[in-house]
Amino acid sequence: MAGPRHAHRARRVVPRELCPRASPEPGLCLSVGPVPAPRARGRDRDRPAVRRLRPLRGRFSPRHHHQRHGPAAHPRGVAPGPRAAPRARAGERQGGTAGSKPGALTDPFEGVVGHAQALEQLRSQLKTDRLAHAYLFVGEKGLGKSTVARALASALLPEAPLRRHPDYWEDDRIKLIPISEIRLLPDKPPEFHELTLQQFLNLKPAVGKCRVATVVNVGRLQDQSQGSLLKTLEEPHPHRVIVLTTPSLNPFVVLPTVVSRCQRVFFHPVPAAEIERLLASHGVEAKRARLLAELSSGRPGWAMRRAGDERVIELHHAWTRRLEEIFGAPADVPLHVAAQLDSEQMGWRRSEGDEEDPALFAIASWQIELRRRMLASRGREQGRWARLLELSYDTLGYLEQNVSPRLALETFLLECRKAS
Image (cartoon, rainbow, N blue to C red; front, side, top):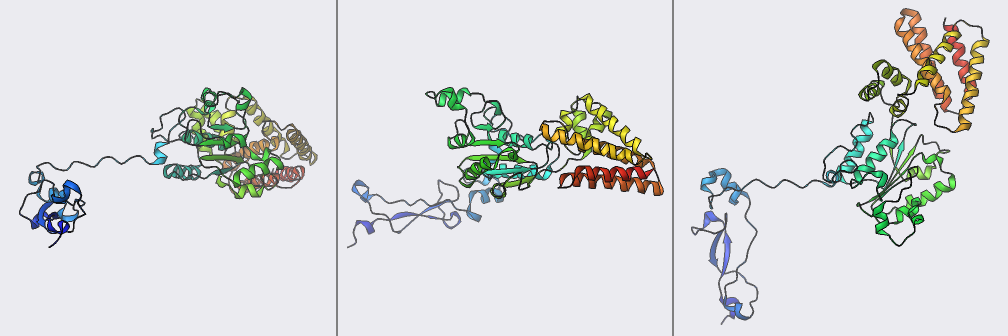
């Protein structure tokens, strides 16, 4: 005689269409039939075992029944409601500007001019939450690398503005002591909060879910300091993001080993029309905005800094007059101008200030005048001005290479002398 384990009869789930009995659950029907049951214990030994299966799908599902026969024919008389809205992805939850709520779905790079490819790359990584542990923003000064770096940090740290966020470190920011960090480590003296980069990265996030460090112009660091930074990049901490900026990938500026351990993001000159619209949106006069956009050489940051500087306009007119004096002048005039410009550039290099390179500014002013003359002329004369304009761009390339600046300027100005 079979034992109690085999003597009972359990319920079995079958499709509704194959069973005339009603079911208390849509799309399911209960039928009595022998099925293997788990071992019963104590008082449950004489009770029938019930096996609960997953709700049916396909043409036996309640949703299919509702779509085919309408809500009135639904087994319970109630149509299945709409699905709940999907949860926001990781990148969307952390998007937003500094001080905004973490759930704000705003563009962190709103207001940044140009750099569509670089910004799209960063937006995609923010949405998928697949950020690199270290970035290297490459581009000449004034293109907006620091602005994008701070916007990226604001998207990762939306709890508070960066200037007082305990999880943000920047090499040139004012070293304030955030109250949240003092509360986190109240037994430490104030000097403890003046952290170096390595000390900052070794600490866990205080408020946010990660820590962000920005080093502007990593080429300012000596080789020994870059070697210490390299060790940090080789052993990345989880939930840490480091953003470095550099004007070029020259091995004398930034070590190749540092470059190889960072994800590079390139920034290119911005069209003058976009810079002009940016200046106009900030209340700059249309004529002045157009001139600054042409003088900026595609650098919106430079144009914004010089928007209220009258010396820039005066200096531009001065260099334009010097170029007009060279046309048809004796040979010693362009040589004297080249020597003067070379001397000013050497003084600028020694000063290491924030002023504009005088040679680059002079050539940018001359390019505006050459372009104006080219568009106003016809025939062979137009071709002559076009060749001089092309030579000016070649001279800019020579100044960025290991070529004597004075020799490059003399060659260009002597060709300008022959133009008339």
